[in-house]
Length: 116
Image 1 (cartoon, rainbow, N blue to C red):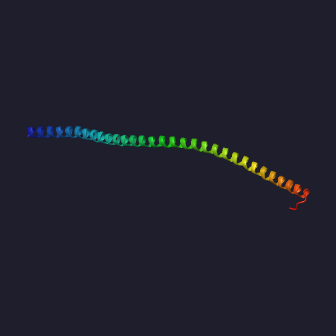
Image 2 (image 1 turned 90 degrees about the vertical axis):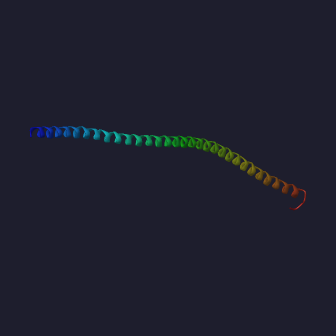
Image 3 (image 1 turned 180 degrees about the horizontal axis):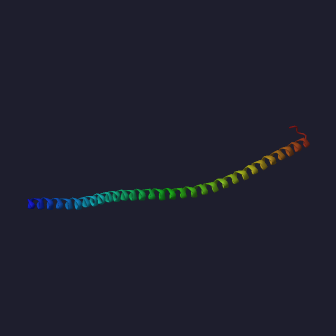
């Protein structure tokens, strides 16, 4: 009877020890799988971050190019506006000269006896 009890007791102790270490092993294995999943998630996030960084760098480069182009076009517009203003002034001066010459021509014709 003692042998049966000893065998049963030793089996129970062996089962308890096995259960304890198996449980610790299973917990460690579960934590390892969880860490691997998090690592894969972080690697995917890193890849996404790299893609977005490239897109952002490209967008910043294109923005700088557009800003430079806008500045150049703004300078060209200012030059064209200045030229247009100068030409308007010349046209106005020529119109004034034509009016003056027309008046002088009328006076000359009147002096010569011609009616205009």
